[in-house]
Image (cartoon, rainbow, N blue to C red):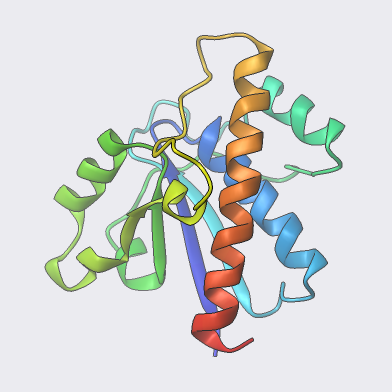
Length: 159
């Protein structure tokens, strides 16, 4: 059995590709890259085809995480069928996803930070208009939530 995860933010160049890169790294370290399919997308189409924001890539590289090969794309209707977890970075994207999803896949859509049980924060803030410290904060949040998500998948799918 395989699991699949889609990370979603607004434009798919900051938060969701960061989550994809961090989670892919953690899954690789756990030796589960052949069992867990990972992708990211945006609810908007402004950046389709673009690589992740250079500031996100810089923070990733400094933490030993590669975002190579990632390109922004927009959420597609079939993503709700294809993915077991559709994880929004904030409430706005959560509501947009719920509005798009077929009823039978509604329960797959959650806030990513639900998996960061030790955090009081519930949303990953958009660092796009801020400085480098915003990207560092996003990585801290994402790394913690990624650990919780991986534990959830391992337990749920008995990997």
